[in-house]
Length: 165
Image (cartoon, rainbow, N blue to C red; front, side, top):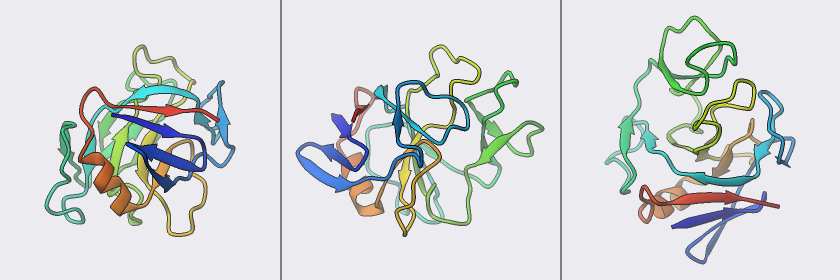
């Protein structure tokens, strides 16, 4: 399945849903901390979910990974685990995946800057749940929960997200 994000909507299999992207918009020159969503074609790597909030697990053919309170993602360009999942406590800069809000109840890491990883080119680019006020993300693509659960049903390891203006 191909998911297409234009910065305002996400289209999958003819279905359109509202989407939020990075507060700085879309970019073809992504850098760590620029608050922009990268333009390009990215594989869907896996589906992480909060088992205490998403039960039963989402239906998808993507690899499913249940989150725990000690899960994080390294966003320190100087660290050898940059742009990779990590376990907390972690001594370098990182993002906590187990959050008080609901944004990361479902997370699909996009295959951005991961093959190969280039320090400083951006990390933790996810497809996740939108905030209730639809504010911009830090560089991710976000949609509402029911739409994400529905689209995930048709996603597998061949699925990609295309982000373009």
